[in-house]
View (spheres, rainbow, N blue to C red):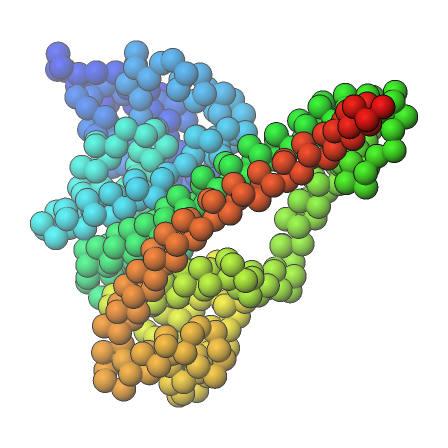
Length: 437
């Protein structure tokens, strides 16, 4: 180590000292810690790469303290490069950050800047430590002779599946900037749809949780007080009051059982979703649900048409585009249908006709896809369908939100009102009898 330090020690007053975590390229399982003096972190990285080292981390001495350093030391001590038990919290990159990354990289590549230099420029503008680590590793993998698409696939939890495929197409066709631009547009559209759905159901969800909490509070703490009064008076209770008192009794005496049953049902549901056949049945039932089925189908159409159009414009062949588009559906029932359609298209049959025969999407979708195939403008018609159904999703969510909020208020108010009325009915009867006596 001392020989290494002497070899790279620069006689310059502006030099800084860096702690370097590296691996040998010939023995990637072995890691080393080196101390290097250089003008910048980039200069250290270039020297280490030139000497055959795989650079894991470069940190200036005296910097990077605080919580980040403590976490880093903990992760290194655990021997787990993924970040130990806190990886799910720390090792996360948002969709917005990915979109910005794709746009920046596309712009730099269009300007004629080499990929490694472009990644270096982007890395300097990123503040999130984990994302910086990812980009540093991408640069390392590319500098070692690997392709950018393979490097992206190594971080499949960060970069969606479509990234590796489109980047691979861009590398093959020489249109990497254009493919990155298509990725940014696709992710922007997908994020916009997801945000609209989440926003539409956020307030109703909060309202449902609040009212459910109020209902449980009434049954556990308030209703028993009335029950004690009724028991002391030895009153004959109406049927509605008896039902409410029975619910309160069950919830109070068997609260842990009730919670356990609900938790067990949730766990069983999540577990059975991992079984492909059961997951497919759940997805089919969701599409046929009376209220939420239509919105799920419209979102699926937007995803399919947007992804298929993006892939075809990027130069992906129709069969591969259908395979990728099916995996992006997040619905196994639709994915299975698209897989069957792909088999028929491989045998020479038309995409629109097969979609109509399988009845995967509405007839309007399959008809316009057929027209696009016949006119040789499939990408154009896919974009038209994506925009049309995105507007349909906006309209549907706006109407659903407008109707769902007052419906929930009336329904929940009716439930709580029923409990209150059931408690006061015997009291009113008791006061009436007292007045008559």
